[in-house]
Length: 273
Ligand SMILES: Cc1cc2nc3c(=O)[nH]c(=O)nc-3n(C[C@H](O)[C@H](O)[C@H](O)COP(=O)(O)O)c2cc1C
Image (cartoon, rainbow, N blue to C red; front, side, top):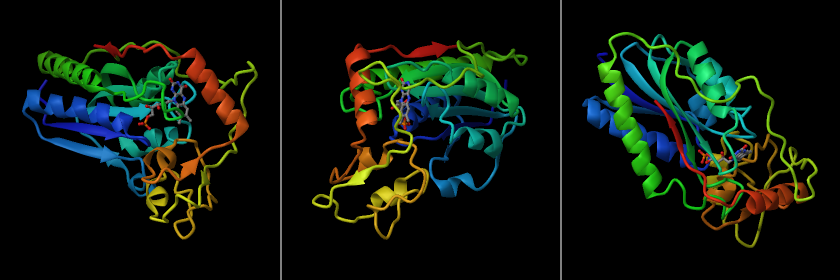
C-alpha cells in the first residue's frame, strides 16, 4: 500500500511509552522514506482538539497499561480525539513487568472502532512507574532495538499489502474488568484517593511538577497543594529534579512492595504482526 506519512501518537506520563513509540515510528519513517509527525496528548492542552488521519497514514499509537487496561482517564481521549478515516495503525502498550492483561486488546478494539485499521500490535516492558527496581531502566537499549526491528517488519508488511487485512488479533478481552491491586497481605489495596506529598526541604518551587501533571491537578502557585484528581501516574514523582515528591499512603506502599516481591523476574516484550 502506498503510504505518505508516519505518525507517533502517545500518552506518556513517565516517558517510557514515548520512548518506545518514537523508536518505532522513527524506524518506520526511515525504512519507508516518509515524513514523521508526533502527537503527544499527555498534557491537558494537547487534548483540546481532534486529530483526523488519512488512508495514507501509518500511525504508531501508544498508551501505558494501568490496572491491566488503557488508563481509564486516558480512554475517553483515545475515543474522542482521534479519527482514523481508514489510516493504518499499530497499537502499542507499555507495562511495568506485571502484565499487560487486556490493555492491548482494549487499545486495538478502540482504534478499530474509531476508523483505524490495526495491522500490528506490541506490548513492551517499561520501568514500573510505582517502583525504582521493577523493570528498572527499561526500555533499555535492547528493547529499543527490538522496537526498531519490529517497526521495520511493520514497514515491510505495509509496503507489501495489496488489500486491507482483517484487524490484527491480540490476546485479551477489551471488555474485561480492571485488575484489582493487592497488598502484601493478599487483600485489595485501596489507594485511589492518595495524593503526592511534597518535602519542603527539597522543593525549590520550580513548578515543573505542575507543568507536567497530565491531569493539571497541581496548583502552580503552591505545588504542595493538589486540588485536582491524582491518577498516581508518577510524572511529578519520577521527574522532579530535586526528588521532592513522594507518596506515603500505606495501601499504596503495600501494593508496591507486593509488586516488587512477586514480579521481579524480567518479562519479555510481545510483538504481533
Ligand atoms: C496507576 C498505574 C497502574 C499501573 N498498572 C499496571 C499494570 O496493571 N500492569 C503492569 O504491568 N504495569 C502497570 N503499571 C506500570 C506502567 O504500565 C508502566 O510504568 C509504564 O511504563 C508507564 O508508562 P509511561 O512511562 O509512558 O507513563 C501501572 C502504572 C500506574 C501509574
